[in-house]
Image (cartoon, rainbow, N blue to C red; front, top):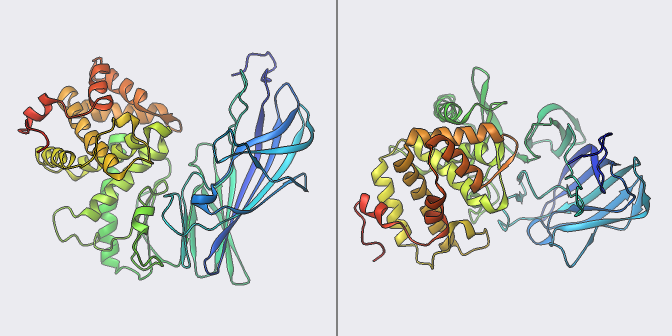
Length: 460
């Protein structure tokens, strides 16, 4: 918020004028990633600053190590953790006051070495690695002062990825070329102002592509697909993309990656969990049977539909932390619509799964990622039923239109339950406050919904 005539915040404030991120894969046992982040920062506030607040990857989930900081080319004290703040929150103390209108150059470097699925945003193996679009890079914070504005990212972010020469790499942003040197390849990308947050995926893969107009479906595999299998799979994926684009709005850059491969260094098959939430416009599936379905709608195919839908609900619009489960189940609901399965059968199945959940139910809006799996599972089933209950109350078309309007109105911004309810109320012309409270803030499935679908008895 700015209220002064010259546009200068009347509070402590700074902005990022320039940003670049470099990711370097370092082979070893285990392998790790060397990260370097370079910034030019400007003090745009009305007072001198004595520290720079930011968040960094956690030591537990990301394996953060060897943290180093420089300001204007000189070593400084590494970012310090305040015990009264969140674990990831840090401060870089400044040796001298940073005056208004002054600029500083800041470099942060550190290693990441996560190799277990403790966090779905990172995975590193000897022949591939994956960084989702949050958590692994520094995030700068504003000051906790009245009228102090948030820190926004610059108009462009440059990303470079250096990997062994037999790796391929993709990242958010537009490719800007590659350079080979001494058995390594550096891939360069540039993220625009409206682009997705930085993500990186790289590994030892062959590449095949199927093009549909201005949409490209790319397959990465350890062993190439046959041309006919690649074409068949590409048609299926593009069909799902068209369904979502029509329902929720077309993507600005339609480039879809499919990683369909079992051949990775993950003997316990944990990668399926790690890649549950894929980067934007990208589908990761560890299943190799989706190319030739053996039944009408196999789970791998549904997984792909859900993963594609996450682009709209996890990246085109971004869930606030408290809305993480809403975003996840919006993607599942979209996959259900795309699969065009028997509606009543799905409802009865979801109710049965909810009833057999085996946990003390926690209200959906109170669930966190740290809650027991059994409670989260019950919350997931209840949210899916909630979407069907919304269809009963408002009509499926109105629900779909409301979701599309929310995506259009909030593209690039965050959302939560209030925004979802507002979009639905506008489309349905109803006050849904009590409906939301009954389903999301109270335990149990409403009796009228159970009776409507022939399940009035509830849990056995």
